[in-house]
Amino acid sequence: MTTFLAGGTGTPKLLAGAREVFDPAETTVVGNTGDDVELGGLLVCPDVDTVLFAGGGVLDRETWWGIEGDESTTHDYLGDLAERAGVDSEPRYLPDDRQTAGRDIADWRRFSGASEFMFIGDRDRAVHTLRSSLLDEGHTLTEVTRRLADAYDLDVDLVPMSDDPVASIIHTPDRELHFQEFWVAEAGEPAVEDVEFRGADSATAAEPAVDALREGPVVVGPSNPVTSIGPMLALDGIRDALRETPVVAVSPFVEDEVFSGPAAKLMDAVGHDPSTAGVAEVYDFADAFVLDAEDDTSLDRPVVRTDTSLDSAADAERVAEACRDALARVDEAAEGVA
Image (cartoon, rainbow, N blue to C red; front, side, top):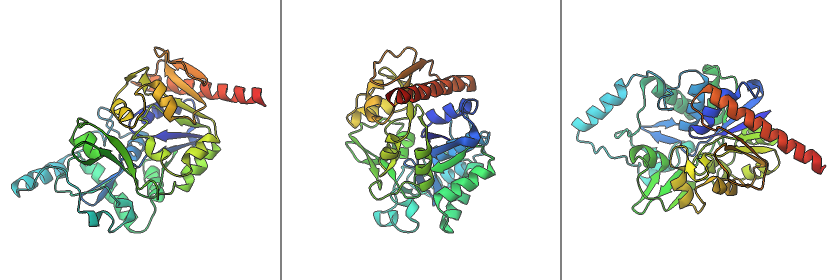
């Protein structure tokens, strides 16, 4: 059994070639849910859905978001109707008392659908409608995610990190922003003072996710260490499970240059050097690393270097092979100690 921690686009891109290296039937993917957001009463799980749509062969690989060729009828008409009705177009939370009313899974990530600041295509919306409806019927997010994975014929076991709400909240000098508002509505431009994983203290890691981590080994793809992997690490028991199993991590940096996204800005905000060295500090549980061939960072753990770009399935297979080689080095080191 091999388990991948998936958040953002880094790990989903890696999974595109990993199936040639790691048996999909023996692979579990644990999806980050800290980025989840409820918009207009529908629970959107961006990181889970990227894996879901990619595995189902329908992902829009230009944006790495949503369904390829999806229609925008409802989204466009909603925006037009709201404008004609004089509704403010700025994203806004529902009132505080509505953040904790209704289903627990919506806690602290509920936005008014009158301002749909994220594009949701028509077929994509159907996924969120079915997910939200099944949750309202009493199913857990793990159960619903597995049902959707079956619907898309995924050949890996896809599970969320938790059935409980955890919201990635970005603290800026002016106000608090949910990560989706920060990254989508504000294009990641506001200055960041801190990052909070609201609800993590009371949330419980999903049992299938913890079981998969303990069975190991684990691959942490080149995802954002703060908001893509950080919410998982904030859950009680996840770090302990990772310390008990072989773990290889792929750096999303080449020394101090990040491949994409806001990882550097967020790493700096939470007090870690925005670099491969900083990632190694965050991932103190990792037994080995895969670094880019141009990355000369010296680490105190086994390192395998390769071209870590993930522009194609062939690239992903190459990086997955490097992950396998790094795990083999961990095994060799353990045998040497024994």
